[in-house]
Amino acid sequence: MSDLADRLEAARAEVARIEREIAQGPCREYGHQWQSHGGCNAGCSESCGCSVPVKVCAKCGDCDYGDNEEADQVRKHCEATNG
Image 1: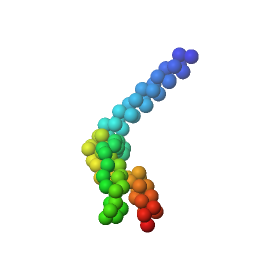
Image 2: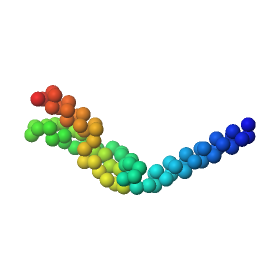
Image 3: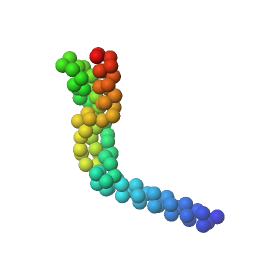
Image 4: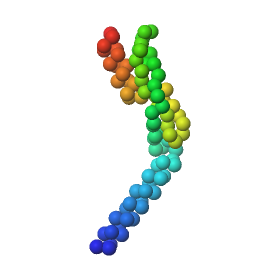
């Protein structure tokens, strides 16, 4: 039983090492860690009052300026609703 426990502990240690590597690695290789940073006007039309989420990467500070999947859904809904 000790062998299985040792193997499980080694596997957990390897997962932790990989997670640290990803967290410290470059965003272009491992992807951004997006966090909500508020919102901005969707710009659907001149009278648009829609708001879309803006996200900032916790690792590198890059901002998506509201160019994300949630924002696309808001704009599509606005277009379908308002023509």
